[in-house]
Length: 61
Image (cartoon, rainbow, N blue to C red):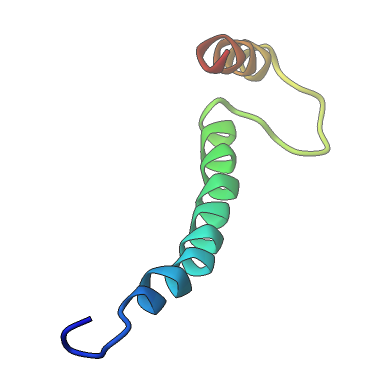
């Protein structure tokens, strides 16, 4: 108030930016983790992939 500069606009304008960034990360991490357990899209799941997915469900629940 003393300087006459309204700095709150910086905070409010950063919300959409960080929201988009977090959405990108939220989509990227599961792809990496599924790749690590051996998941292959549009293919029959192997025993290792099923075991990995079950463990991931157990860890995240």
